[in-house]
Length: 102
Image (cartoon, rainbow, N blue to C red):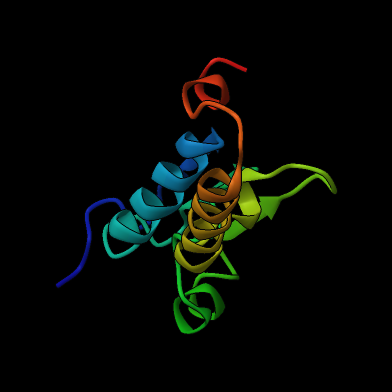
């Protein structure tokens, strides 16, 4: 089916979680707006798998600073962080509430 918006330019932009939303939205709008472009600043790293990232590379551009944590978050990294924090918390001789109010 031919989209009535075929000739329209559309640009989406977002930062952090908004960059993730803009990336997903651009993917969803691509069939109706074939000229859509997305500029994602510091998007979460767990949005697309490698295959989907490759397919969207021509219309989604991501910008990542060298020291930002959010783009490096993944399910695996978050589980590792949780497990290591729990291990250190259990092995600590200090009251557990002191870790919450640091």
